[in-house]
Amino acid sequence: MSVTKLSHCKPGQTGVIKNIAGDGPVIQRLLELGLIEGKAIRVLRHAPFGDPISIEFEGMHLALRAAEAQHLEILL
Image 1 (cartoon, rainbow, N blue to C red):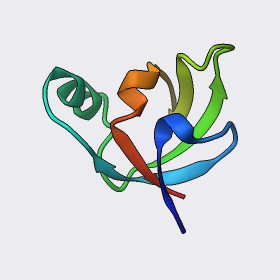
Image 2: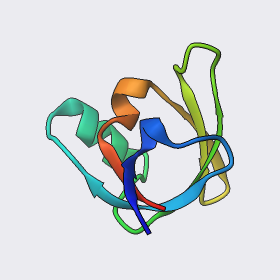
Image 3: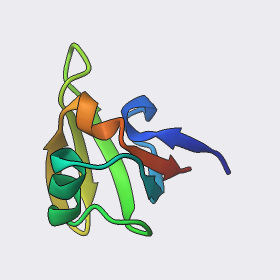
Image 4: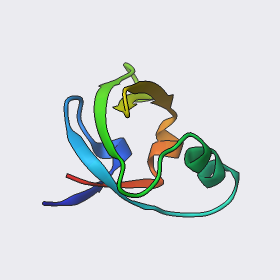
């Protein structure tokens, strides 16, 4: 098992949120969306220039900016 940033995950990879690094409004937004430690996620796709990143968790599809995805550490 390894830990990486969500922004570095490739389409099709699945993992569990290990940590949310940082503070401020971006972190608050991620928490409000339900992206909390222990949640399983799957990377669906990256836009052509890498931003946004489309993910799936708890049956929902969500698009995150690469800058937001940098805050999420994923256990693969």
